[in-house]
Length: 251
Picture 1 (spheres, helix red, strand yellow):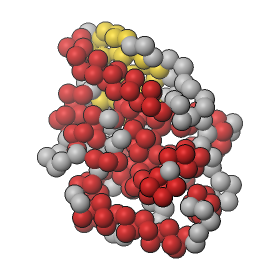
Picture 2 (picture 1 turned 45 degrees about the horizontal axis):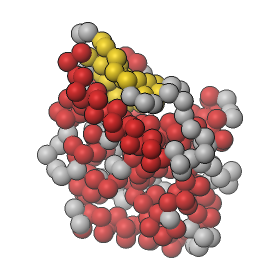
Picture 3 (picture 1 turned 90 degrees about the horizontal axis):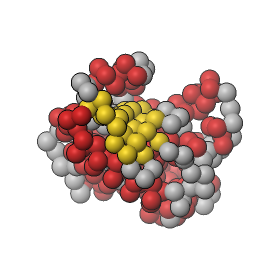
């Protein structure tokens, strides 16, 4: 495989020489994401590189923890864990591999096409969250696991993946038990974005930005209570479960 590099205004892509057209599409999607999200988050990222991997094995070699992440994710969402974000690099499966990874249900291919944009959003959110940037790595990892529903869910919502997730959500609700509130680690990639979606519908996009850029020291439930104007958590949980039912009904 011959690795080459393609550039855009804000990103560099490293990819197989046969993937030049796909790499340009990925860069275009990243530039669109950057143009939409940077005005919302005060601390921008510097130039980022995206590495497009032509196989799952190649991707895993860059992060041996990925198989554990797949095992920890609900089967309905597993195919959408397609990369990881480092400090200045995004590692993601190539568009050709992502197309082969898609299921036949509506929205699957669209979600996977936004994988790089979701990783960029995840990195941007982390950069703007001082509760992640000002702590030791071990503390950061624990916080990211505890708040995965918020960090991963927000990234996927801001990248546009959540709007295509209805069939996958329907599968998760059919195959799994009743999801916890807020969603646990297993459901974070798929259901976390639905809670952010509910917040945006009720309180606006700015509320979602504020929520994902701080980690309330009192924990996720306290953060949600404050985000939804201090109303009873049971009310928000009921609204979220009704929102899930509506999403599944419309799929």
